[in-house]
Image (cartoon, rainbow, N blue to C red; front, side, top):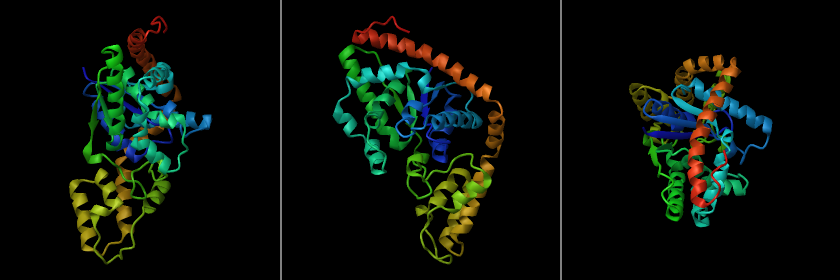
Length: 325
């Protein structure tokens, strides 16, 4: 059976980009194979320094994912830090990872360009990601187009390790959803918590409306034709609306006579309606904290079993005692 793996960053509530780029594909894949989904709290330490905030983010991501349809009966759902073997594997993999491989990471350079402080953890981020993937013998990793390089780095590290120590790791394959490869944010750039342009999934109605109305637009007059291909409004509308609805908005853009404010109102309405069932489920989960904790604990137990099998092979291969649990 094919094993899929996806991680969710607890750097705040899940946003629209997380949903279409990772969460929805993950929910679809849990019907097709063996799914391992984790909350990447170790990764979040590169930017979240308040322990209370991190714990709250982890809880919110767990609730968001379950509310959106992640089924713990079909997927192994757990916190990254509940399987400490991942950090041991990251250290072992660091010993076969060339510096040049990390220096070429687009993500590292991009984060520095957006003002995130440089650190060893940020630089070595792809090694921990490789450990996340290789620890669970993952076959397929759904990634956004911008994350494809990290998967390639993981494969390069696995190949290097296998060349030195024998065939220990399988080589994972990426699964990229091209139609939603990049979700634009409020400023028209890639949506990201790090860039401050994200739209969270479960914002209150007034907050969501205000966010949508703040979408950056140009100064084209109301009466003038507008190019829908260059509009963040249209790009986001396509994620929620029917094909006929999208065609109608694109027609109105080209025809002129409708202002950006009206288009933003249409975007808000379709977005608010689309997530209504999930908002109801989220409210139910908020009131049942024990259920969420039990889901993560059960998932961690299952994940540790798989991790132990992998680490037994890894320790034996590199010459470290394989007797530890």
